Image 1: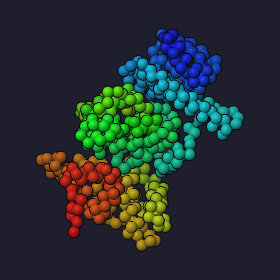
Image 2 (image 1 turned 135 degrees about the vertical axis):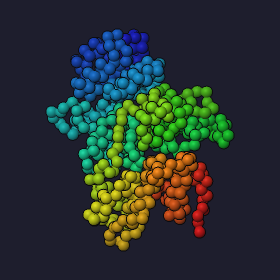
Image 3 (image 1 turned 120 degrees about the horizontal axis):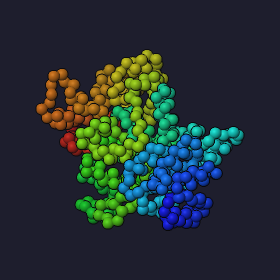
Image 4 (image 1 turned 90 degrees about the vertical axis):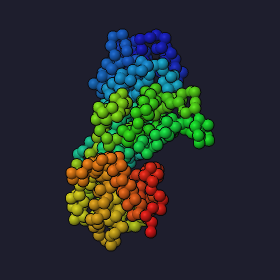
Length: 475
């Protein structure tokens, strides 16, 4: 325990001693490094500001020495930049002053448990001549191994992605997953959760673009009974639901600015205040965000808060488009065909080399989601022995996927024609695609949503916004 304030140092020491820990204290960088030279520990807790330097120097020492200790840093109130800098330097977690002792004990317990688990697993696997724990590959649980296996592909870029997931899962640092629609951002978020020490906790996925703006605050932070019209009972928000686990914020770039400010505060303070409540509730969640948008450009144009971007982008993870890793197509097709067979109860169809070649010739702007849609169609139209692409369907699916990924670029495809009302033009395009998908599935909204890579909730919201009746076009 490293802190230059005697009263605080004593308070932290007593709090941990009562939990059964042996605690060694230091009041400076020099004293802490001397203690670390003499013995190893399960965890290190360090104040950021010390008389002879910064807590970051302790972090750097642990990293350069390939030490196994997990490091928790304590930052001054409101010092989000210091917290981010510490997480980027490899800190396991951070706490802001004034430190909540219950949260303090919880974070230290997590750090110690993870350090002990790693040490035990390494000892069991390699009985002799071990390198330092931190230089070994991350040791995965069964859930973690399964989650990584779900990210299909043996290309170099996908192998690197899985290795990076294993590495970043070990801390509390926020992760921003970037990639086009259909590249598997939620799969990556689930893998980060499954490979982390929070894998036994909840994983809560939120599509930020699917929530009406007037409901955002209640959905995220919860509400008390009677706090607004329709609030007939207390309800918990996404943060409370994800307590002790991971909160995945998909399409983060679609949040309005007012909500971005409230979200930033919740992330920094690690507490939320439900609508209608006078008290803030502490929440312990890890944030994983995702977007298909260029948030740097959104920050430059004033559409996304720079401080929030800085806070969620501690670890950046870019996912490749399918066109950039087409060598993975055979493995992806085999995996998807097996899944389709499991869902339908039919035998697994085998993709021929000719069929794979047909797929590789397609642009696949909708990525893996579009590929799955094409395979569903191919299986449905097959003669039970061979697969072939339905050209009209592959074209319409490609158009729909492209519209979902980037509707503005689709609007510009008409050569030489610029719409006088861009939003109305895009709404008309979206409406046409939704109606076509609904007709194609016999107005089964669940099936239509799956065809377009949406949730049922999303398609209901879009149908209401665009005035699409439940039986429109039925005849």
